[in-house]
Amino acid sequence: MKLEAFKSSMSGDIPPMDIPSTLAALWYAGKGDWERAHNIAQDIPTREGSWVHAYLHRVEGDRGNANYWYNRAGRSMPASTLEEEWEAIVKAMLASAG
Image 1 (tube, rainbow, N blue to C red):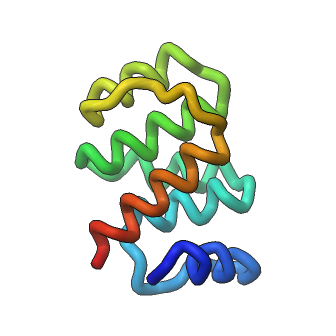
Image 2 (tube, rainbow, N blue to C red; image 1 turned 90 degrees about the horizontal axis):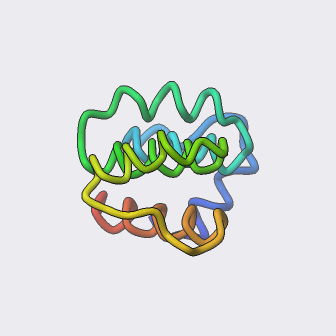
């Protein structure tokens, strides 16, 4: 799936069935459903899941918690906008999903 197809899927009520949970969390985050996105992300025990989790806490405004999760992901908090980071994470997750 390409970024534009992923974004287009957000006009629906549910994420595509064949995407990994990291992308499902980002799908809900992109639609403004932080709670649902966080519920998914907190159950992903990988570095990718930690990156999504970090982003969500950055969205929430909890920089301390975000930094904890960025560290778990092996990353640092970016200087980019939230929108730029969301897109960068989506692109990375789409690339790793094949």
